[in-house]
Image 1: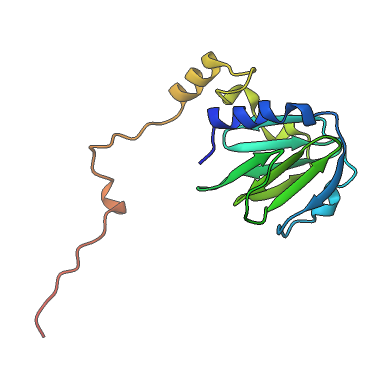
Image 2: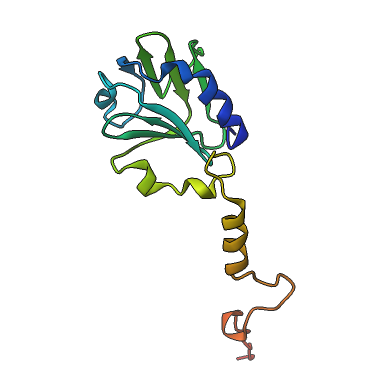
Length: 155
């Protein structure tokens, strides 16, 4: 399952796509893939398990689920969920969840919370961890949350 560090690899491999226009789109996705055609790729970014294809007015979010995969400038024998042919090269995504994000990415993602981001802020992460309540795993839950034992009486 691609995540974190393993998503940095395709971001680097696909970096040449930044600045290029998407000239053809195909695949078996149910999202309106034609919305991507003609768009110019502004940047390729990652956040956690999300691979983000940033375009001028919206972003394509790719989540690789449990067994997702991708190919850059090559294809698998199986049909892609989404194939984006750029001016030079292509991005192919398989077994993944695709969504459009219409808001600015800075409004959706906290880049300081992502360890793989250049904006990662370890001091802020530690502050947030200290502020979050941590359950004591050996403790019994309060009585009101336990299942009430039902006494059975013979009829």
